[in-house]
Length: 309
Image (tube, rainbow, N blue to C red; front, top):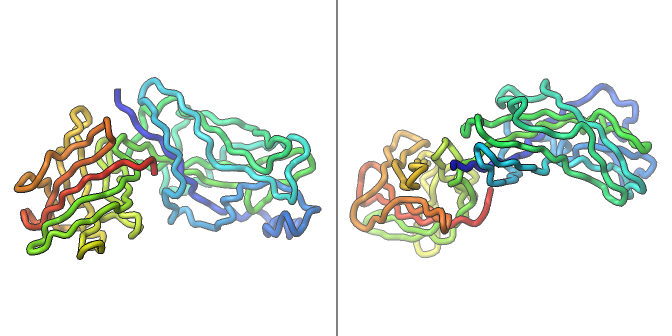
């Protein structure tokens, strides 16, 4: 059976509410220095990030069977804005708010998930995460980023809702089985040099149902490192950004292409190459590729899975 990975990433959307009556609270000058003010908020919304620049900064991965699996994921936290934890349970009401989801995201399909309309922050705690249940991931487009808008609508126990931190947008992606964080080892034969690159943290990001793209974490962009000498690396920039496509049944690589520019990239099968494939037992990706159809511009990569991104 096909398996996909479901991830949630927090895309912070700050929605400035109506004029504040409690200026300290609504300006988020809260908590420790001002113990008479007690409230609840989405603390992530204070980071003041724009939805248009939101990145996959928080990934919560789970192996979800496309037709039968049920998965519960603990998503964004609701927090108490007070000096001390609650002495009794605090009940917080939440609701969907589709109007705040930016148009760059597709609304999370109705009926494909469930989440509570109220959640309890237990006595002695200062925050709780909201659980969202996905019966399965069938019907989800792996190339689409989905958005879900939430708002805090009420709270008991003498707390109040922080108007400037009550709304948030959460983005979701469905990841294929090749997606994840990897350690890259290999070399390229840029004649007359053969320089290695070793233990390079890479993210392989879903770009299609059975394809992933190289994302160099150190560069914070799509692309691939090159060795420039013993123990040193550089890159050609994001103009050389390989994408690998697999046969989902055999796990063999069927193509390697460049998604970053006009320079052609192809799978390499010449001298020194090895079979390009994914090994599900070890979660390793083996891939040989070159650019400009030049056998002296070939890369020989082994990627070892280190965990979900």
